[in-house]
Length: 107
Image (cartoon, rainbow, N blue to C red; front, side, top):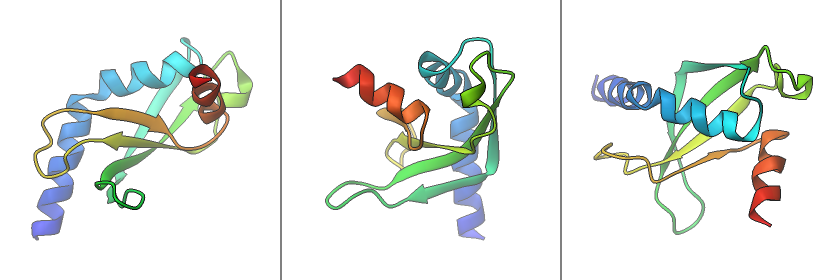
């Protein structure tokens, strides 16, 4: 039961920050699109070596003027302290084509 309660808490945290998540995604894709999160896919993912765990959630885009963004089955990584869940430290879409746009901006 503890695991179920923890997941509910994580989902509630992400839902409370849904506008921030959507704004981040739209920054790299298309402003006209619809972003829909699959809240049942929320889980604490293991970070890379020597990093803290993060939350991940799957989402999909539809109605984008950029057809390449539609129906790709994206994953959003949310860097946060998974025990405190008090703020979002960083966001990253983990798969293309949005990931390519994020990487292109960093260069």
